[in-house]
Length: 323
Ligand SMILES: C[S@@+](CC[C@H](N)C(=O)[O-])C[C@H]1O[C@@H](n2cnc3c(N)ncnc32)[C@H](O)[C@@H]1O
Image (tube, rainbow, N blue to C red):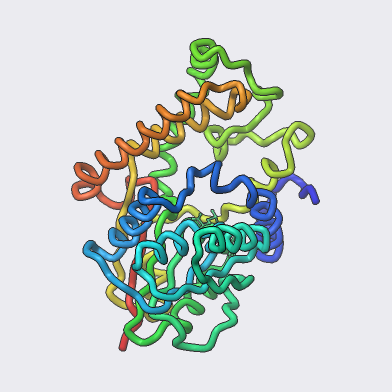
């Protein structure tokens, strides 16, 4: 299925359908693409994000539900870290859930994987003491319905935590390094001796997304076309706060994460997008990964405690169900 170019907003059903297709296509290579791992680094990253969403410290939950669990980045790492005792992982994409199940088996973890749309969770009221997710809210076309479901399946006193959501202002700021990277790309490729990617001058990188350029339908892969439909929101801290309160949750807390690390990461991904991936030296990926982790630490120590949530690239929200 190749959709028409979106000149008008897609309908709710279309967004859901395209999300299934896009993530089914992405599932096999997803962990590699995003550097997802289940070792010590993955556990530390995920437990750190959840702890930051909750305002610090460590917590333990008996029964957690992940919404949009994908290949298992959060669920599997949180189980391994002992932060949750039991987990149900849901996702709209069967492809993502198959990858999650395969990883769970490899790691010897027990996870119930259930195909479900965020706005229609097939669980009784008050079933979980933690409802969580990572990088999923921005894909949900009907957030009011979804938050009402999260609140419904939470036990009284239960916790909601979503991390890694795109920040509207943070995203605008990140467009600058993406554009700078596009300008620097020819010199960068010469330096690494990497040939340009075929049709790269036609590819609409993330750096151009949202700046008035439309992709040339015939030149793009199906995945690249679908990408234009799957992301339906970028948030301000106030948006997330409103959705949580609107569902009757309290003690709502919104914070921001990653600034220089995201600029560095997006600049590198934009550069990489202009070259044939298999022609790039392994050392480049090593350098890019180490640099990203170093800047993440710098952001955490210096910037996150001082700057307003809105300027960061990722937003995190947590809240509690009364009772
Ligand atoms: C960007 S991926 C993040 C996956 C995973 N949470 C992670 O951090 O690696 C977004 C996930 O949300 C899922 N998703 C998209 N729309 C959804 C919906 N309406 N209901 C449930 N899951 C959805 C996608 O299939 C995908 O697995």
